[in-house]
Length: 279
Image (cartoon, rainbow, N blue to C red; front, side, top):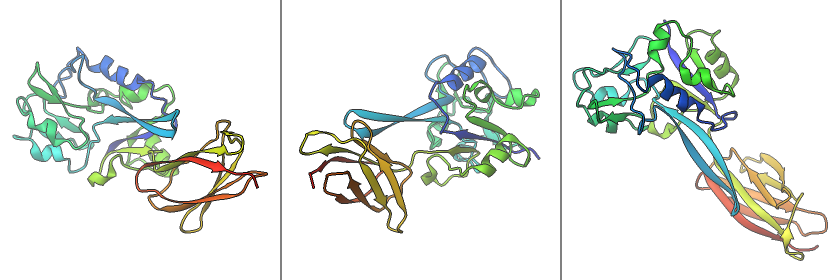
């Protein structure tokens, strides 16, 4: 039996918002009963993008883009909150808000821990992503948001088919669930979700200038070692770390080696300026 799911490769997502535009183009002004009524022009983001800003230095910010949509959860919380079976899961795994039965059930907006159910004031109706179920039922192989992505960072298909694009992609890549702390089992998978990072800036103290090409070594508690190098501005970063203690060592020709012990307790840790003194 078909079991639809989506995987998103964040390593190639460029935050262009084409997926969101395609969703609007498909659903604004168009009804696809009995799956959904039309999406309002404003205020609804059935396909949205979370922009996560991460500090590399006081003057440098890196932005990670995380596309968001209904996660089509197994044992979905919204189904439990719906009255009169207003939300149901299809045999193919797609979770649908019934546009007739859900009228007036505003509590369903708050039932979603991912905040991806929206309230249509004009229709007195909660609405969300449907994986473009109307298109799939008409023979399409993927939703509009997947079709329109210029970097092909979306993979959609049948998890029960080992030859499907999504099955092959997930077999070759380590995936995660967005906001996994919610403890839900979803049908949207992410590759490359932002993990804790350590960044900082190195300065040559005697010259009071940015220290480029400084070797920066990071050692984890288990002895694993990562090496990096400062850029022209003296900045460095290590990504994909865990919430634990690390030892960071800085080495440059003609300067004393500097070592710092850091405990990362949140997703992003900016070490600040590290001053190197002449040997």
